[in-house]
Length: 478
Image (cartoon, rainbow, N blue to C red):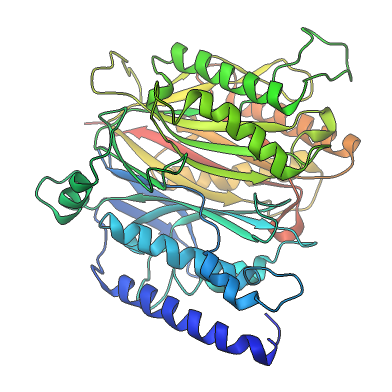
């Protein structure tokens, strides 16, 4: 972290004392082992390879959390005027998430999946992120380890932010806002929230355009989308000719496609509970791009017609800006109680998503997961061998295969695969993406494939060209 100027030490000491008191206290309150989850871990790693979740569980999905404004005190006299460095901001973020969990009756021992986005400045400080993470997970007071993925990104919606983190957690039996008579249920009832779905309870300030968390009910069928990218303004364009319009037009294209996909899956905008948006640095400033995206978002969410406010993570990555695309999204939705959706298997794929390089179909537009499926969250995997991008991607997939098999599943059970590809020049990036997509098609075929997200990022932990994470849904045989 380096030495702090003397005039900053007082700020650091005061804020860290408050944060430490809060997070240590919360970790001791309700210290328990969650009997709904099974962790597959390696002692030498600070995170788990995979985490299994029993069928019929209740989940809590958080938004992407950035450093608390109180952390500004740390850097009040800093030239950079930041909310602290990566370590300090990570500590603040994880402290805030610990408090968010406590609000709904959860602790860090209930977290099953963590995604972290670390801003490059000029390179991501993965060491600072890890150092803070290991003060919250895999400790004496909290030996639990969740599955985890960490990638380097371009920036967040505020240029001073260095870290954004999102959690997925699982409620133990008898706890949480869905348990009538519990403290959390009574507290939620006092909030008098208007919900658009009978499958979740929302948290966060009503004036915000998104929720800070969604607590889904037990036995909820879920839809996981592939990454949605803007459609070309010219049908069947010639090779190398890209025209997608302004970011306003591209944002409109994304939400239009979302609506079509939801309808095909038997859902609507009212059923969406999580959105992840990636804005790419282009000719518009990031702030202006975020504002334009939000304007389009508000046409579909957080309005009188649809008051639904999904949880949300927003960041900037290199993405596909070189192809003149400025933004992409992916989302999760929940099937309402009166849905007539049938699940002959643990997962059902619908629609198609296209390759990046040649636009031919490659995966599913989205995958619906049965409410009686066991979920398995697999940590981000990197290659254990040297070689070209296809060799390294194959090595990462082999590690994922071993992880899902350890949980009693197979590649056929994967519902969502997310590949992060380290940026390079346009030719190198195209080659990497084409090789990865060819391997994906070879591995998963066209019959009931998983949803797919391919996203160029600044860098991967370990310096490799690709990291792959996944989630699986397994129907337990009677």
